[in-house]
Amino acid sequence: MNDNNDVIRKNGKAGHRKRLREKFIKSGIAGFHDYEIIELLLSLGTPRRDCKQQAKEAVRRFKTLRGVLEAPPEELRKISGIGPHNTFGIRLVQEIAREFLKEKLIEKPVYTTADEVFDYLYHSMRDLKKEVFKVVYLNSQNQIIDTEDLFHGTVNSSAVSPREVVESTLKHNAVSLIFAHNHPSGNPEPSKSDMDLTRDLIYAARTVQIKVLDHIIIGNNRYYSFAGKGLIGEYEMEYHGLKLSGTQRTKQDKTRTNISSPKLPWSE
Image (cartoon, rainbow, N blue to C red; front, side):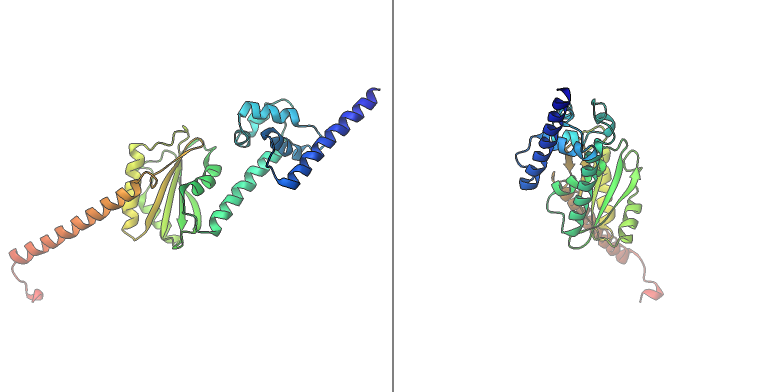
C-alpha cells in the first residue's frame, strides 16, 4: 500500500512539473504565479525533485520574484531543501539576462532613456560592496562601444582623475560618455562630492569636444540620473559661460597690451 502511495505521489509530482513546462512552452510566463516561475528555475538543477514548497518559501522570504532572482545564493540556500544544484537555474537566468541586456544595448542606439542603461548597469553593479566608477563609451550614433570600470573605492574628485577619463575616452575613439557608480548604502542621492566630480568631468570632456550624456548613481533597485534632474545641462551652461567669459577677458587683455606696450621690431 505504501509503495502504491509513493508511486502516486511521484507520478503526481512528475505530472505537475510537466504541466508547468507545457504551460510555459505554450504561453510563456504570462499567468504564472511568482512561486511557479521560481519552481521551474529551481527544477533546472534538480529535475526529478519537487521544488514547489521551496519556491513558495523563497517568495515568502524575499517578497517578490525580483527579490528571489536578486537574492545571494548563500541566502537562498538557507531555505530548507534548496542547495547548490537548485540555485543553478536562478544563477543561470541572472547571467543570461545580464549578457542579453548588454548585447541589446550594444546593438542599437541606447540613450533614449536612463531606464535602459540602468537595467543593464543594475545587474552588473547591484551586489558590489565598494563603490565602482564605470564609464560607458558611445559613438556618434549613441551606440555603446564598450564599458569599463575605471576606479574602485570611494568615488570623489580626488579619487577619480578627469585626465584618465579623457585619455581613456580618446583611446576608445568615443564621442560621448555615460558615467555610473554605485552607492552600497542603497541610497542613490548624490553627495556634494558627486556633484563636484560630475561638473569637473563635464568640463574636462568638453575641452576635447566630448559630450557627457549622463551620470547615473545606482542604489537599491533605484537610481539617480543627473541628466534627468537637469544637472548635466546646467553644468554644460556653466562651462560655456566660463568659456565665453574667458574669451572676452583674453580680448580685453590683448587690447590693453596693444595700447600700453611699445611696438617691438618683430611686431611690425
